Length: 250
Ligand SMILES: Nc1nc2c(c(=O)[nH]1)N[C@H]1C(S)=C(S)[C@@H](COP(=O)(O)O)O[C@H]1N2
Ligand SMILES: [Mo]
Image (cartoon, rainbow, N blue to C red; front, side):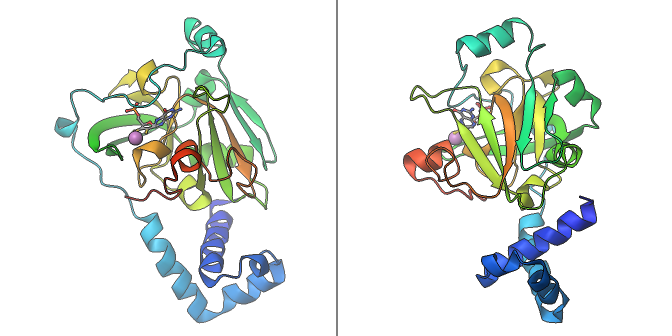
C-alpha cells in the first residue's frame, strides 16, 4: 500500500465513522461515491487535521534528568530474563495479523531502518510528566515493510510483562496514530539503549496520547480488523481493567 493510498483510506475511514456509516464504507463502490462528493472531502480533511497535528517537541536542555519508570519496571518472566541475559540478541519483534508479509525483526534489523529522534513530554494519568529524547523507527516503515492488508484498522502491541493475571500488558491504536510521523518504536532514550525499567529492548511512543498507551517490552505487533476478543475487548490493559479511555489524547 503506498503512502497516498493509505492516507486516502484513512481519510475515508475517519469520515465514514464520523458519519456513522462504517458498514457502508466497507463497500468499495460506496467509498468511491463518498470520496467524490466535494463537501465530504473538505469535511474529511478537517476531521483529520486535528488527529494529524504534531505533539510538541522540546529542546535538549529541557530533557528531564531522570525519566521515572512506572508500571512494570522489569517483566521478570523466565522468557524475558533469558532474552535480557543475552543482550536481546535472540529477541524478535513479530509483526503479523492482517499483513501480506509477516516479519520477525531482530534489533539489528530494526537498527538498519532509518531512525527518527524526538524530544517529547510523557504525561502519566497518575499526575507526573517527564521529557525524554526518544530514538527509534517510525511504525509506518515497519507497517509498509509488512504491507497491511485491506481490512486492517487497528494495530495491537503485545508486551513481555504478564501482569500477574496470566494476561499480558497490551495496547492498541488506530491507523491514524499508527501512520503519524511521531509514532515510533523506540530503542533508545536520551542517547542510551533503552533500559529495562523504561521498556527494553523496544517500546511504543505514540506522542499524542497519555502514558499508558506507551507500551513497553514489545514482543509483537498485529494488524487487526477489530479489537473484539483481544484481551478484555477494550483495546488495552488499563482500558480493560480500570475503564481508562481507549483514545487517551492529550
Ligand atoms: N508493558 C508495559 N507497558 C507500559 C506499562 C506497563 O506496566 N507495562 N505502564 C504504562 C504506564 S501507566 C506508563 S506511565 C508508562 C511508563 O513508562 P516509563 O516506565 O518509561 O516511565 O509505560 C506504560 N507502558
Ligand atoms: Mo501511566
